[in-house]
Structures are given as structure tokens and as C-alpha cells.
Image 1 (cartoon, rainbow, N blue to C red):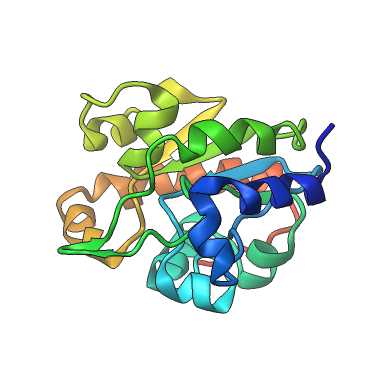
Image 2: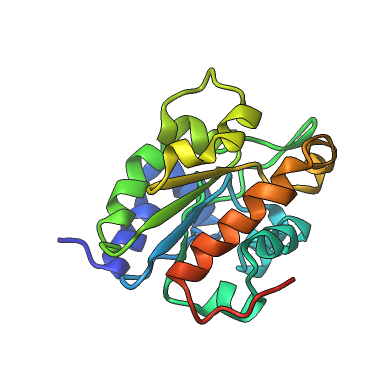
Length: 198
């Protein structure tokens, strides 16, 4: 039976991750047995991988604002877990970071979730997470987010908080007006000790 330590060892020893392990790069994710909320994004960025601190960039600032959560809670609450679609930085592409590797989440997320029986809500940030978990790759992300209530109480789909999505946020003011307040309310129910960030 896995322990958190043997789970991480298995991830590091997976042949698909050998290049990272050989270079001393460890998988970046968090699993807590007390977790009630899980955030599933794309993959760690270069800065996050180098500093060993997930969401350590402008995307993270925007995400914490959406959640109404301060950094202390975000990084230290055992009621919050982070499972990217890939636990390693995938490299740079022509228009930003490369996508997470296919099949990584299918292999490792279920084993991670086994350690978190108290999870009540999973936030799906961006199309990679939504396509994987909602099994509906042909549905427009905008409509998926607009109809977030359809996926509750298990999932809450969101756009990725990347600065590259600033234009999307400007074109869809209903997101800040309607979805963010609902998100904050859900998060506050699950992690009632958070400090609200207005």
C-alpha cells in the first residue's frame, strides 16, 4: 500500500520522469489527508519549479484573488491540495509553456486522490483540466465556466488565471461579477479560517 513517501518515490522513479530525476528536479504537487479543496491547473511554470513554490507568479496572485485567499492559507493550509495536470515544468513553446504531458494525470491523480478522502470540491483551471475531468473537449471553455453550476458539487470549472487571459476576462465581465463571488463562497465554506482578500 502506498504511503505519501512511496508515492513520491514512484513518481520520481517512473521512466517517463527519469530526465527530471536525473537533473535533481522533484515533482511539484501537494497532497494532504485533511484536504477538502483540490486545485488542478496545467503544469508548474519555470519559476515555480526553480523556487519549489507552485503558483509563484502573476497567475498565482490572480488565482488567490479569485479564491479570496491570502498567501499564508494558500501555501500552508492542509485543507488545500494542489495537483497540476503534470508535476513537472514541460518546457517553453512558441506561445508560452508547452502543454502538460498526455496521460500523466490519468496515471498519478487517482493515486494521489486516494490519500484525500475528505475532498469536497475540485477546481478545474483551464481547458486541459476540464477536458480530462469533464470528458467534454468539444465544449467551449467560456460556456463551461458560464455554466459552472452544472458541474457542482464535485467540480468548479474556471479559466486559467494567466495574464495571457486578461483579454478573456475583459470580454466576459460576468465572470468577475457572478462566478468569482460564488467561488469565494464555496471556498470559504470548505476552508472557513481563510483571510478574505478583497
